Amino acid sequence: MKKQKMIVRHKLFDRICHWFIVAVGLVTFLTGFSFFYPSFQWLGAISGTPQLARFVHPIAGLMMCLPLLLMLVRYYSHNKWEKTDIAWFKSIKAVMFEDEENIPPVGHYNPGQKILFRAFVVFAIALIVTGIMMWQPYFAPYFESDAVSWAILIHALCAVGMLVFVIVHFWMATWVEGSITGMLYGKVSLAWARKHHPLMAKEHEDKE
Ligand code: HEM
Image (cartoon, rainbow, N blue to C red):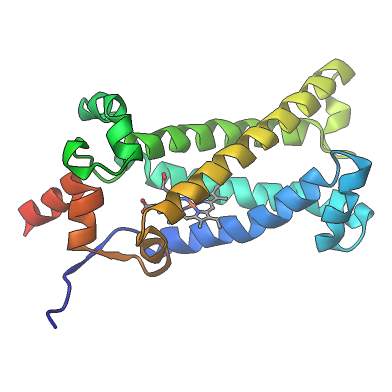
């Protein structure tokens, strides 16, 4: 059988960052949502006790958001808007029904992924800023109580928003076969790239 030609899609550093974010993100989300309602308190069991969850949550949050921002900076060049992106949105029906002949070609990322990218940037920054403002007993005393109340509200809204976008991200990643393997091992086949990201494949072929 002919061996498939493989090309690099994610560098080792980015893959380590990504799976580290997923692992620490799980701790952040579970401990964070354990504070929402008394009946959610059991979610914080991942850190031992509710008191420990309060201590662990802000540290895990920073350990998730800082590498995420670093990764987003490294992926910025792949996520710039292109003129062809509008055509992709106009063909969203073809995308959803996998009518491949009518999907306009996309580069390294499709416009749906580019929207997720922007949402992650906004949520990561908002969660860090508001999280620091409400962090007792270290930083919260430096802010007016009204400002801390706003920070708590915005932090909670951003956490829910981030969770929604992560679920969509997870769904997109599992929907496109071969995508998770790419994030695990770094390489995808040229045939996969031609099918899902034709402009990325073309760029690679032009370089050869
Ligand atoms: C178990 C959960 C997750 C899975 C299975 C997953 C899977 C993936 C996959 C397969 C890719 C590569 C997509 C491609 O090559 O087209 C990717 C990229 C990425 N993921 Fe995840 N991911 C998960 C959770 C997260 C979380 C929690 C975050 C951050 C909050 C995140 C942030 C990113 C970012 C920033 C990229 C870079 C590509 C982009 O800008 O879209 N992921 N993920």
